[in-house]
Amino acid sequence: MSEPLNMLIAEDHPLIVMGLKSLLLQLNPQLQITTTESCHGILSALRNKAFEFGIFDLNLEDGNSIRTIEQCLIQFPDFPIMVYTSFEEDVYAKRLLKIGVRGFLSKSAPEDELKIALSSFLRHEFYVSPAVMPFIFKGAVRNVREITNPFEKLSLQELTVIEFLQKGLGIKEIAEKMGLLPNTVATYKKRAYQKLNIETLVQLMNLYETGFNSSTSNGLN
Image (cartoon, rainbow, N blue to C red):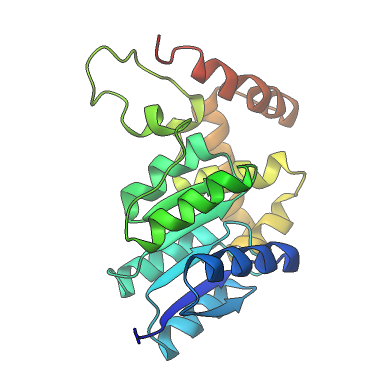
């Protein structure tokens, strides 16, 4: 009988946790699944137990999930992490893969794709959706026209601030979620607005509506 594999799921929506656990146990009944709802819980769990896999959301209530993932990968460089989130995949996937994440999938993906992604991850394979693949490998393949996305100019911290702003959070709320000072968040916001060449939240919302669409218009023929 094979040794059980330990999986850590960081997700604060009970129904999503239930669905992930059900699918994962169908794929590998030997998995021993631990769950946490917080960034603090991620680091605490990893310090107290060895895990073979981790599936994390980017929007946990108690802090900056991206910074927590970076900390995990520094402290546990061989720990495979898949991100399963509602954040925009064509912006975040490439950045997170660069820092060492092994997979990225949007929560809007259908169940069939989720099963494929989880199966690949459990085989220690990288996974991103076919729709995002051109963004990951842009410039690496001949005859692929340059794909531009205004949000690619931003750092991961700036992206996180922008993501929360467009979801309706204020500077103070974002600071609490990211574990930063409000002045620091305001600085990230200012830098992001400058890079995006915008001045107002209305312009940001419009850019969210048009930026991703326009960024895919120069894709493969």
